[in-house]
Length: 279
Image (spheres, rainbow, N blue to C red):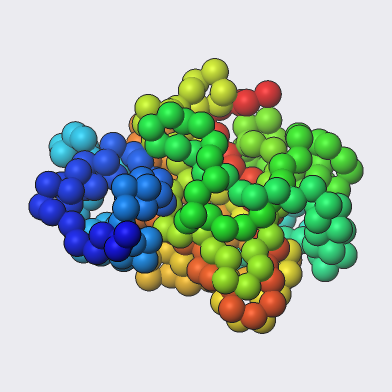
């Protein structure tokens, strides 16, 4: 059966409404593919609509209030109890910090070695049900550590906590991801759809701390299309982006993607920070 490669005005309107309601773009692509749409056409359609249309909040009178998180108030050199970390670049909207030498080469290698035997296909959150599902928009493999699972994980959690001033228990367990050639994570938000936020589980995600564990020969950049920012993976470096404020709002400019790896492979570690303590 030939795949669908056109959309109606009603479908375009539905896509905009669904994004405004907090649905992740890759979940919409997944839904369109299930309905018979060509996957590449669906992805390009979502990118075009999100990129060229203004995404409004439900309450048009209350635009997102930008607040500088504590990590952004510490200057161009950051310190933890055992290391000095340089800020390589900074973007205010969305708030993005690119950091150098967050982990040592040995710490990166050790985390990869500890993780590689536990990898499974990565999941996304279904916008309708809140359940974790495998989706075509996310083709990496990954695994999760529990909080303080081992000495290295605990050390990394402490580094992130000292840098961000959010306690370890206010973040999810560290996740490690591996991307092979051609694998990617299509445009998405890290925060949850509004209907899937659970206060008893720490509430909404407000920030992401992403650490690059290896150098990638080609591809694999982290791209923020609305900000025009592209970050090349560098072993031991990290990017922190913040998308939640004290008003409970989320920043739609934090849309981002991990573009396909074209040579080599990519390893990253991610810590998602919530509004409140999870554990």
